[in-house]
Image (cartoon, rainbow, N blue to C red; front, side, top):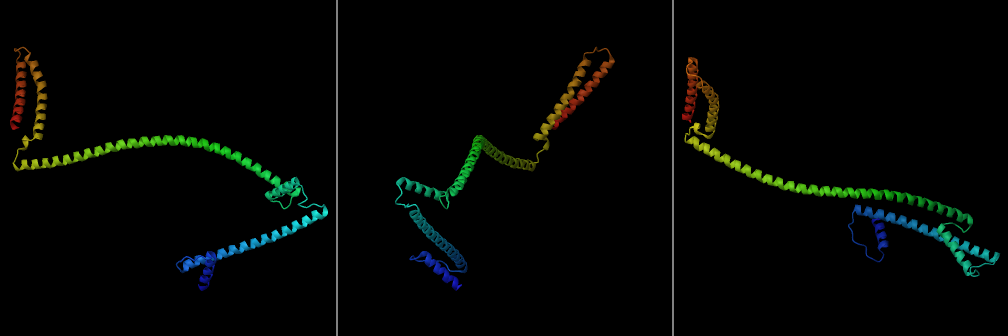
Length: 273
């Protein structure tokens, strides 16, 4: 643990330099995390140092090779960078820049042609990909247009539904208020009815004079009146006969007795009420 703390402190000191290291809580979890960061940072720094050394070595090699080539040009054909004309120097500079852009090792035709062919193939592939993407973009635009139209229709339906729901909600609320009022009124009338029935019961009221009994009696009277009508018509048919036949007189007497019995029953019912 002490070795970890020492290594972490050294790493933090190297990271922050002259600035003070911020205060932090020292516990096993924090130290594990900082130690892992220390190991990762040191590994990256080591890789970076190796890469720098490799680049320095390649730079030295390139410089040595450049000096050698300059000596070859100067001794073989008597050319030097200062002896070239401005157009020739521009051509050489453009050739060097092209080699650097193409990423070739030298400026020979054997290096340039494969690099140019590779770039040409990449350009063709990019153009094909661009055409395919344009087609897909066109299809997406059509789909987007249809989707926007559908969205507008759906939004209109949603707005219409929301308005309908608002109206129905108001109606439902009004119905609920009406139901509450009716329920309260029904409860109130039920209580009053029970009180009235209790009061009538305490006064020993005859049930025959209640509204229900009177309604029932009226229905019975109506039924009897309905039954009387055909008997009266039958009696009238007998009254139209000549008084001479004795049988007609007997029928008349029977009809009168039936009528008298019905009238008597009706009168009893009325007196009973």
